[in-house]
Amino acid sequence: MQTPGEFVSGQVRSVREKVDLLAGSVAETVAAEAQQVSAVRSQVGEYIREQRSAARVSLRELARTAGVSNPYLSQVERGLRKPSAEILAAIARGLKISAESLYEQAGILDRRAGNPDTVAAIRSDDQLSERHKAVLIELYETYVREYAASGTPPSPARSAGTAPGVPPASDPNPSKESA
Image 1 (tube, rainbow, N blue to C red):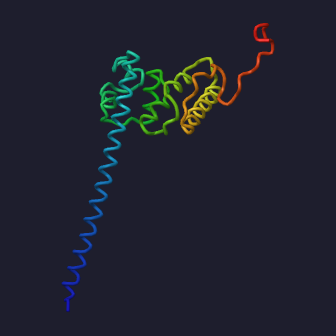
Image 2 (image 1 turned 180 degrees about the horizontal axis):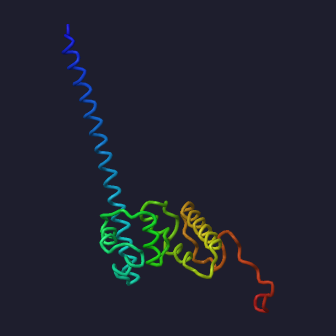
Image 3 (image 1 turned 60 degrees about the horizontal axis):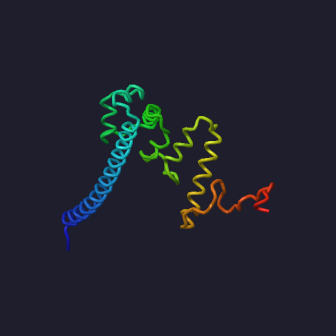
């Protein structure tokens, strides 16, 4: 028969083993999440650096226009800091790109369907109202999703300006050659 001391020692040992097991599992999960956050930081930093280089803007100039310090922006580009949504919006303004594209890179927004350059081109068109931009982007993403779901690319034989599934309009004034 066990003494009360032996029983308590056995229970303590059992509880310690369970705690150690759970702590190891939690530590692995935390480490994996930290690695994922670090990868996102690096990704958004690399994207900012690429956009800054493409725009031929110096680090100092972008820091000034975005209202952040040079060292902070440098740390963001190197993946050492995770910028807030407000800082990302300021950086986007300084780069003259959409804040949405930076939010997607940072994991704040889900990636949209389609080519981000096409979406950025629509967003940057000053001739369109915000409502028109939103409608065009929604239509574009719908077409991209439909083609992805069907597994067939757009037909090169389709005439430009003809929507998928819509037959070309007949000419109301046919010429003699076509008559």
